Length: 224
Image 1 (cartoon, helix red, strand yellow):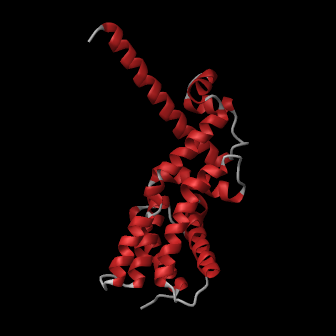
Image 2: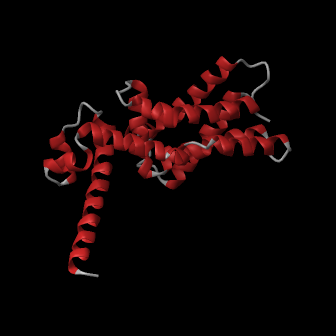
Image 3: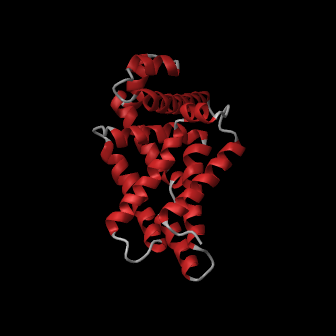
């Protein structure tokens, strides 16, 4: 490999490292402060780069935020079971391989572990909460790529486990309530202080999952 090719490869590698660092720093700052609470200067300082680099990689603050939201959509499979996964489990329910409570527990175990147990998803989850509370001009990215498909898969699950006379409105309300319940625990600092834990240890996360899943089963009304 020529010296020129080596230099270009090294430069490309450094550029991708800088881009990823901006995505990570940006996700944390936007999660903590909101879009309007983050400046280009603070992004550059936290990422330890010059101000022009943000514009070079993303065209500015809005472009960086858009890239973070698109990355959030790409993480959907880590947060919510897909509709295909739900349909597969529903088939197991119908064949008698699973109970209704098993189905609810499986769904919310994956969701809660995804938003609380995976440190890479914590800032993503906080951004989701902010967008739900005060939608930005880019909210549609999350609605189309994350919220709509995720709530559709949840509604499919609730249709399978709730009684036939339950209305669609009630299923949607129950689904939103359950997701909101889980998202509440993303704010680690407030919760661990309130409960007296030092942090979210693996054992504490399992305790949280067990209690929330058990309560989700009861709330849905499929205790067996």
